[in-house]
Length: 316
Length: 293
Image 1 (tube, rainbow over the protein chains, first blue to last red):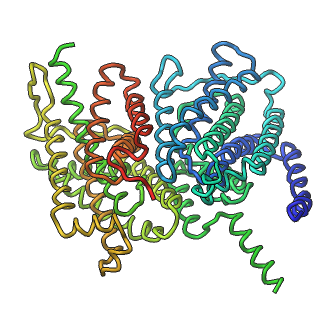
Image 2 (cartoon, chains in turn purple, brown; image 1 turned 180 degrees about the horizontal axis):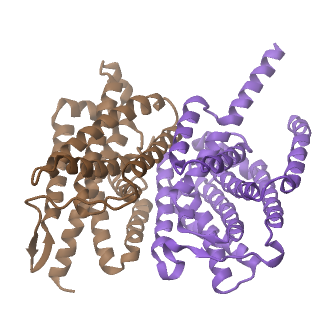
Image 3 (cartoon, rainbow over the protein chains, first blue to last red; image 1 turned 180 degrees about the vertical axis):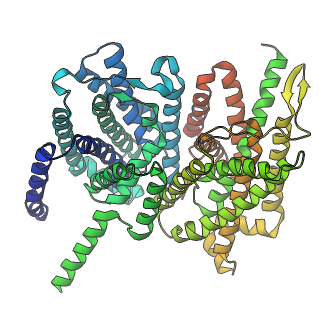
């Protein structure tokens, strides 16, 4: 019951945010609108990552591989065989899920740091295949000229399309986490031995979660590439995979919207920093260290802790 | 396919294995004792390669210049190792491994930009040092004698690490600490001090291996991630934190790569991962690894 009460209380700011997002194109420059689009798409990637990290307790360092793989699928279908746009997106998600199932099959056998290393290695493998398979994927040239259908060509309409997909997939992920399946994932994070004794096949549950995460990462890549009009191998690279990791740590992995907040801050900060220096990685590196040392739990985690303390001191 | 071609390929696989062992042994040693997987190990290797180039250019000695540059590089990397361990990792041992991983990831980003700023994006290379300039003929095929230098160096490192870990008091402490850190600490051995030295040793090996790759002509941005991914394959196959495992893993990865290139160059890396996948199905903790607690 308490949860329902807090939902109603939280409802007003969700509506406020939604209104803000709906009117954003009317007072944003085209440049910042495209940054906003990127933030939305990358937030989907971060949410998919956090299903594994925040809820299942496994850190994937190869999440961008599914993002890029799906982007490549869409780009190749649209430019080479002039496939239907919507079906291309579905195909992208499917490819990401299938490859996610194959990679996940091996990865879910491992825990902790071993899992992180293996996802990183598989991610880099996929990156290298795309990068070196020049006559099929275009190698380091990438693929250009990936256009959405006519009615989605303006940035504003595409923004609304992205916003819709973002809200829909956020809702679905939210429901997944709230479902018995999501609770099982959380119990595996807390104590995998006990969960196993309850008769739950951990590897199977983790594999399902891995495929779901790959699918959402794939959806993010599939809808981003037609907006950006091109795709390049670095979309699959581990530097890209590091972004959702950092967003989750920055915003707070223990809260559902933590990674989204982290990704929004990072994306806009990135756009701002690029205005006066090309040395973004060093800024990002310094930022990571600052968060680790001074903001354990992330921004939202920190805020929640303070809020809890206040509530407790009031009760006394 | 005749025997001599296969033998030649086998030998270049051994040379690659030796290089992989040079880099992966430091990674494995650090992980075995500190239980911290240093993502930035490949970046230390890359920094070593760039630094040795600059030092080599600076000292300008015809024969010895290369070797002196390599040694100075190792020492500088050791100092950098002290800084990273003391100011970064030491504060994170009590925290979870995701934070440690992310901290070393931050170090990668920082070192990448330092290299980009200091040396730019171009390829650099040092000519092969004497007496390893020519080629040796194996069954009529030319085989670069510099590869023999790498193989010898790899073997020397195997012997050195074996001696250090199994034949010295320091090695006793290392093995004990890898087994039960608290007990070693209770016996009055300063664990933080031990960790610093192990990390410095790992960083020095990384720097040295970076320096000796410079004559291969592949000193460039991106060499860090290239090597670290292969090193991950090495330690996953051999077992993280195990020295014999790292040796065997290097051998497997080196040979699979060498024969993979002969078979289909674009997929050489993929073959490594297929082997890795097979090992993971049979033994998820690697051939010589111990199951995690």
